Image 1 (cartoon, one colour):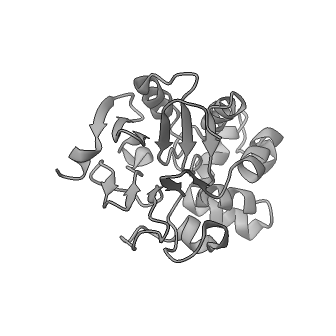
Image 2: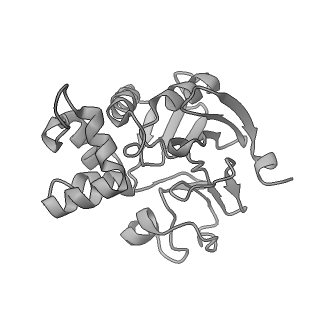
Image 3: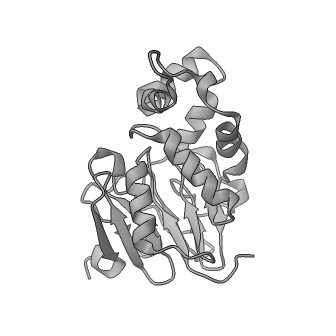
Length: 232
């Protein structure tokens, strides 16, 4: 059971530590608030190591419900073979390894601390649900219960305005970048990946009120109302 307080959804961070710290400051996070991270904390941005350190701190304080994204899956599987590591590095894993690199040599998988591996492999969840909402990284097949969803739907499939879930609950997801900088709200689904690593925004959404905050890696912050994002 969640304790009383605000419930936030956090979009794809992708190594953008400055934006992460700024957006949480802007929301004035309180001790009884909870943040649901929608995954893709690592890769592409400059500070994946710092992002994981920060999020693990929130998690250990009981303030973060972390989901995993496809980039966490790729990072974990990079340990399986050289081919998997090369595949991961094509999609931003090279930036993650750089964030762990000691001076004078490139980063290696062995530089990633055990605490970070445990967080992404074991403590992150595939999905989270409340009475009114379903939280996933990429989306969910409408006709399947959450514990029967395929990996393709939960982590990889781009947002395509697929129908709402048969449970009637609103899906909140990331994964598919909204290049206009605003979340996409189509009623039964809200996508809040707004391109933090590519000069866009990191979005934090108060699920109950529709109020949100966004930050850039430059430190710029702005407020957001979902009715505006929906074009109302």
